[in-house]
Length: 551
Image (cartoon, rainbow, N blue to C red):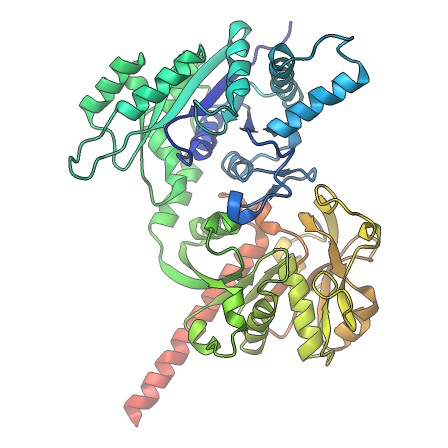
């Protein structure tokens, strides 16, 4: 007998950006705590086949999975909250689903039939939902439909889950906004009513409402929403604004959200365990100290471009008990001859240079790396951050004045960073990079090996360019340590400087694998070094104050 799978479908109304991804991540965490195996799916109604070619400023961070899939940043929240390692089966776009159906039509799989949105697109979607459930052996599949109800783009996806509910146990949750008019000060229910009406027009009656608002819902507002939307009052869940997103599972748990969802699907909790999560949140909300970290980026006007980095520092907060204050520095501004580095980095305990593409702000990042190295400020470089650290070292320590990357300067006299040989003839952007999980062998006695507590590690990558092996000898002779390499020794994966408080960089994106209850070793090591730097700065200030008093 085939195992029965339940499906939870989360839709959104009124406006985008309500936090459906965080809600479904939190609900998944709660269902896990009740003893159920879950797997999420994110549906994005854009024509792109994946998120790989999308500008971070326009759409936020491109999240990379172990299998090399470039996906929406919501999958990062899924992995972090639910501690899962997902595959490309958890990401569906309009482009991806249409591509699959068109490929089938070209092969003749439809035996000459007229291929139409219904039933072929909707049928293929249902096939994907069930295929993921079967392969993951999940008991509950969580489906998030991107966009808002009423959009032309997501109508086929809504139709697919309406059809799914005809033969399967499906629980519908609708997320909508309950705004407060400034002059009136009253929570307004009409936006929720209107979006539910649109959902009903698609043939879907929600079983639960998740109502986003500035403050918790008033009791009479809850009853009003329930009456007009055809939902039980206790199935109207309040989602007030929070400062800490990791509080959301606890807020939902206090309203017994998971228990209500399970009851609606004729299931019961098997267990209950949120102790470690509660301790993690308590540490974040009650820090015993704080540190200041500077992030040198080129997409700083949209913090979502660096979502996984931000979350990785949150994970450090919850495990170390220190608040991490992030200072965002636009790298192009540091290229100005008038840039005051001493002032910019005053009271900064650590400097991080993240990944990125393109020439804008490159020299500013290199200058910041130079400042970190020469002033012994803890430094962590990620992907492009490692490449630029190699360039900075080559220029200012090895004397290779014109060292550069051929990504920016193809005719560089000293191309210490160069494109991978197998990528030199590639013309298309999407899917042509070194993507996904790759192994690295760590050097004995290195800081990297001490941080990971392992000789071999696997990290996620997203890049085309590598350290040019023709320059390894001169770089090493001047003190640069290549502390991690590919198993064949040809690709340089980690660098570090042993005479610094903390100077580590990796060709990978470790931020993609950090989790709330198991923060990434590189970020934990960096944060600890920043805490030590803060202590040293405090002692220095005290000694200066003492000298002034004596004088």
